[in-house]
Length: 144
Ligand SMILES: [Zn+2]
Ligand SMILES: [Zn+2]
Image (cartoon, rainbow, N blue to C red; front, side):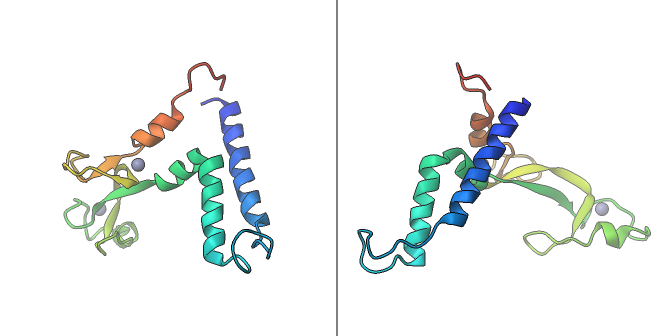
């Protein structure tokens, strides 16, 4: 990926944050009654984001998640000095994980209903998942 693309992306992300920081509840002049509630403000912000930064929304929704082998049966020597250190992090199900056996990245949002995902997590989708791949594909005719 070219530096220009990264830069553009960073600037867009900055713009989104800037907008969030400067958003204030709408006063009595807006269409609703009274001061805008936090809920309404959130909805308005979300709408703005979807309209202006649809790619950021997709990226945020489709974050990559690291997947490690569970410590149970990972093949490490439980007597090894660093065993505890390497197996202290627990996963979604509270099982300990083996930090030595990184399996890969899956999408935090996509699911493979048919269980045709990676062998170590059949109901997950490898990251980058299709929506992210689509975003990263250069758009025809647009100079990156
Ligand atoms: Zn291990
Ligand atoms: Zn995804």
